[in-house]
Image 1 (cartoon, helix red, strand yellow):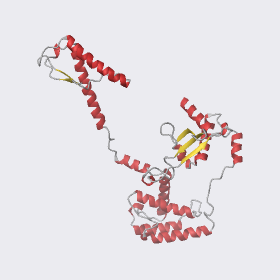
Image 2 (cartoon, helix red, strand yellow):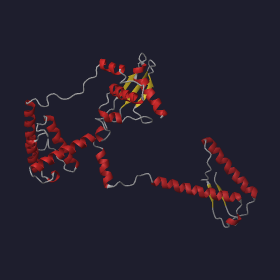
Image 3 (tube, rainbow, N blue to C red):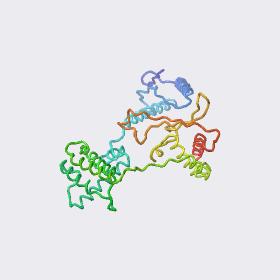
Image 4 (tube, rainbow, N blue to C red):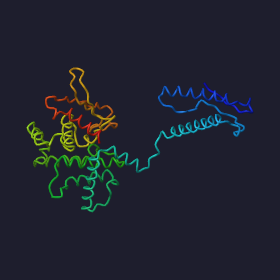
Length: 336
């Protein structure tokens, strides 16, 4: 119900009991509303105050009503100000550039910088002064072809075939990042480069370079037992527990690269959940992937189905159980 308060000049002079009754009714209504919400906050948004002719004639209740009306107007202005702050301030050119670069993996950016520096060092040796980004496609084709055939490591050795390929791809990434949208491995203008790159890679492969690719060695069950026995893994100290969680989470959920471990979160947006099976009552730790090395969450990842993996508890050996150790880790972390 809305109440309208008018001045003495409009109708009559309200006596003390009238204003007190009206104010009590408003306060009682506000208290009922706030009792329901569990928060008592005087907010007179339904009160209308108009046409005061002589403020000096107000009694105490009138002053309270004026103050309440003014507070309501202030709150309404603050609310409107909050609404206008819905959008962030415009970003500067440098901020936009940093945001754009953040979408590219750090390793990709670093590899591109390294490949460009390598090419610029070769240019300096050959007294070529024209910057890479200012070259025509014909100049790029000629210079990159010579660059591939002459490239050596600092020790004077040949690069492995796959390294040559990645250097060209990294230079192509640099060109595209700076507005030169070309494909060194597809466009007809770079056929000479592709032919020489292919021949060079085959020649190096015949020499036995790059045939055996480096792979991480598999940790055997025996080696893992040794790590537990020698207390490399365990939960006796904060660092030991942290190292153990990194090992167990990587092992059970197949996390790749260090960045996927660093992306793990706790709290409301965590990727890890302690659950109980409705079938047999066993507890398990569930990992729900959101971003990964191959699915960074951008435009190209829209149709990627994130993996969901469950790791069940080991009641027979709780000191090595990922569920028990994760629970201990979370409880200790909350105490910090």
